Image (cartoon, rainbow, N blue to C red; front, side, top):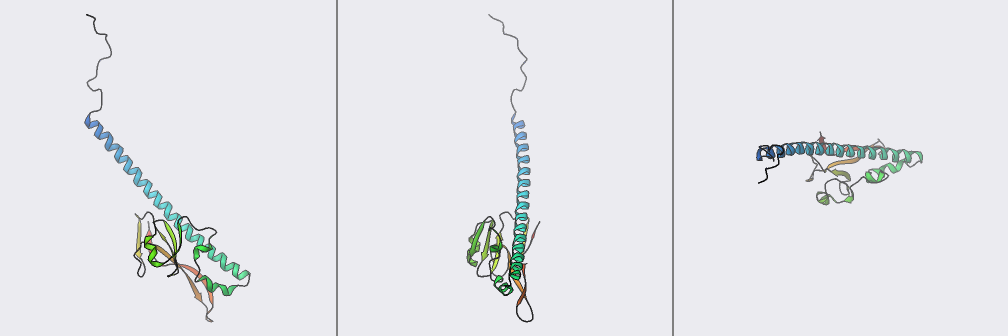
Length: 175
């Protein structure tokens, strides 16, 4: 009979116990959940920033259109701006632009869509992430959680439009 070859002593534990496996899986789940929550938070912050920048760009495009009309002596065309699609003042439409739609079609648009409601003469955005968004007043007859803006003109005493501004129709708080 050959004697066994001596080796390192066998430990009492060669694999994970069920308890250690549960602790490891719980730790991975907690870390993954925290990472996912942070990822969603920063994605929503980025979405809000993109919306704010798009609205600023629309305002800049509106000012440019007014200035161009004044320079070329077409101030009377400022009245036409009240009926125009403000997203048309941008060099290119924002990502997710669905175009001009009827009021009843807005609710069927996917989240993350920009649109121009041709009936109400408003442009809006349907948020993709809205964990930190509170829409205070959705407007008359609006069932969708859209944020909306409208072009409003200020008229002079003679009835001509002397100023055009972009106003928020839907009151909201995002963060």
